[in-house]
Length: 86
Image (cartoon, rainbow, N blue to C red; front, side):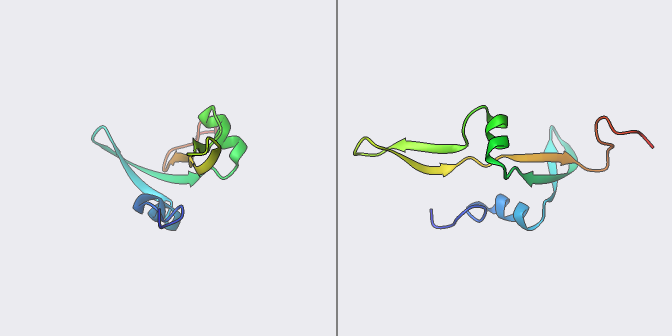
């Protein structure tokens, strides 16, 4: 890959620039904020495995080839779960 994360894909570059997004799920639009989980331990807990991606090279040695990036999505304009309602 020529470009490094988050510029390797258009959507990750757009989220890095502006985390306010609109998601379409089942024909409905939702205003949301997308946030990268930067803590590797937290990302591992969410994934249930390490975020590192490894592959075996031709010499039989494992080598690190990348990382899975985990995002949290927060719906905007709704009260947070467990918060008091106005």
